[in-house]
Amino acid sequence: QVQLVESGGGLVQAGGSLRLSCAASGRTFSTYAMGWFRQAPGKEREFVAAISWTGIRTYYTTSVKGRFTVSRDNAKNTVYLQMNSLKPEDSAVYYCARGKTGVATTDSNGMDSWGKGTLVTVSS
Image (cartoon, helix red, strand yellow):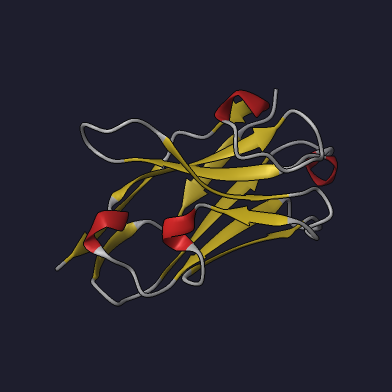
């Protein structure tokens, strides 16, 4: 079973930036798609970004397009989420997830492993 550990969350002012990292255990990281999801208090978990196993294909939810960038370094077994121009509505616990295949998906049901999350708080 793969282990996913997120880091990089914290408190930032609106307009600021954060970079989240997700380190994965195991030797097969490079063959799976990865995704980022978030859950704000009182809300359902929602898709944020996904990246295919090659890193060529990426997907974003509309609200973060142009502000967030997902990337991966297969040599380091790590996926990143660069978040710029942060807004208070981006505040949430951010979760890293591994896809069931190498094809990126926006569907949480297409993920088979989840990290414990990292908290992002954006102050106005």
